[in-house]
Image: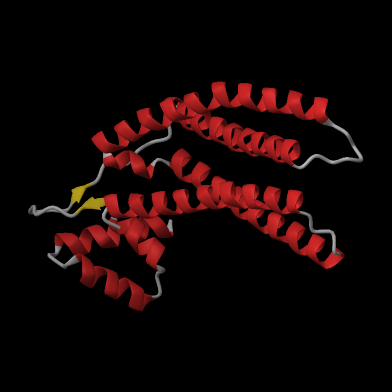
Length: 212
């Protein structure tokens, strides 16, 4: 109800000839948050016309859900098996003399390689396809499934970074740091930080494209 009231106010203010900055300033003074205001303003395009021009609102569709779930699913698989593959190389280079797990390591490397050969190209194809659609129609950036999965991915990446840091500190305090363990920590941190950085940039690019 409050959101509908805010959108109606924004429409009335724009219809009365008020500048968008002036509308935002007035609403901020009234106590509305910046996110609420920008969402309401995003309902109307910033184009010169006698009356406010509504911006197209993307509705959740089964098609978009399929493509985004496929893209993010294969992204998770690719990230997991990339780490698994690099772990395998680390284990080969720095073998555990006690466990003697060379056969298990070789099998893990083959499995991770097979998974990457299948999952990563699928991720790339989905990402390219969706990127072309976004370039042709920037309004698709406001897709709810896209935003939800992006924020879930940011949450997962942040959780992995925190867990990775805890494991590093724990082993440091325990005096059990080894080169093998440190290299694995670096691998996990690099993959998680790359994902977090990319999707943070993606959200900023969405806001810029939507003129928010």
